[in-house]
Image (tube, rainbow, N blue to C red; front, side, top):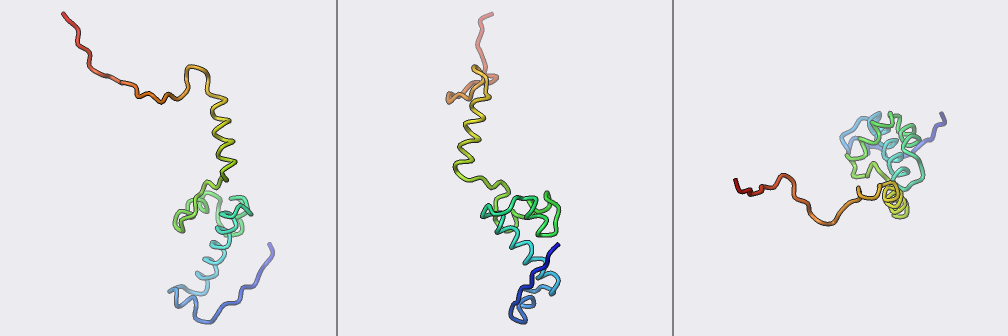
Length: 108
């Protein structure tokens, strides 16, 4: 793995109430999260950059408000079209509310 050096003002980790090691770990995670959020890295590569397992990385994104599912509008529309194409006739989603287990009155 390659290495990058980041310079920062002395005392920044202490202002954030972090050790130097915790600060370095946070920088790696935040850089990976931002690159993932921008669509520049896959979740797997971003997790690798952060030094985490993929599932742990995706779970940790919620802590900083980054969605784990990162689809652009056109990707969402394509997924919706694909889902509609595989729904068999008669099993589609209805906009009408249905009654489940309603009471019926029968004469007896």
